[in-house]
Amino acid sequence: MEPDLSRIAAVDRFYSGLVPYAEPNANLGGKLLYAGNLDFASAALLIAANIAGAASLTACADKAMQRQAIREGMVDFLVTTLDEALRILKNQVRKRETVAVCVAQPAEHLEREMIEIGVLPDLLPTSASAHAAFVSQGALQIVPVSVPESQILLCWQVAAEPALWLPKMDAIARESIDPAAQSALRWLRLAPRYLGRTAQRLRLVRCSPGSAPQFIGNVREQVEAGEIPVPVEIQIFSGDQSQTHRVQPKAAKATE
Image (cartoon, rainbow, N blue to C red; front, side, top):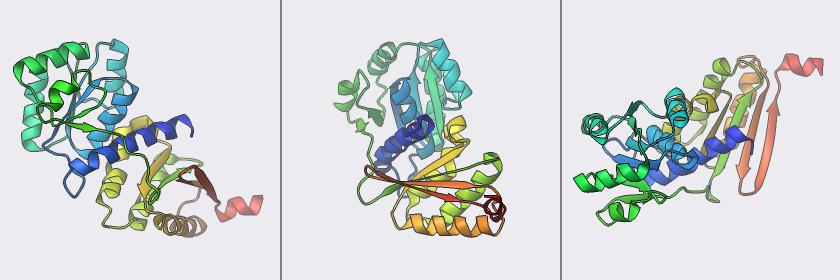
């Protein structure tokens, strides 16, 4: 997979790991997630938690990473102490609203203070250095979930003006996916917002194999009707196999 696609797929695996702990509509509102030290893996978990609606806490002593987290929108607030973070988090947990707070200090320092004052997250990754202390008190560990044989990854991108045409493609995807697949529908609605620049030119969703022909057929119909006047590429990933479908507007076909 190309880098952006691999990053989105990493977020998807964590999102799928969070879904079993969410409400039926894949909403984790009211839950506190501790993501550990902010690095590539925990960033994917943090984004997944944002999509799922959790209130999240992370730690980072690296100033460059702090700036990147704020710039890319994976973190809403950067604070210097746990007390500041808790004031924000308690309010958002009470209101069951999404927020991500980063404390500008090493993870081990933050975790030690969390244990000392009795802050217990509902969810955390297996990589958190103090996870044993949290798990012994009831915190649940999040493990990324690979795509099972019963599902596929459906990915799409357009050749030009993605800001204009990807939302149109997203709407087609929502119409093509089983209405009962609440986690996939929530992902389609919120992932572009929280994935930031990574999702500016491509999309990905985990869904049933039966959704793919419906999606491809609907896309082909709208491209050929001129409602999406740019070439579209759709990829299907199933296990180790992949398929690529390219849909060209009539004008582009005529010049070939």
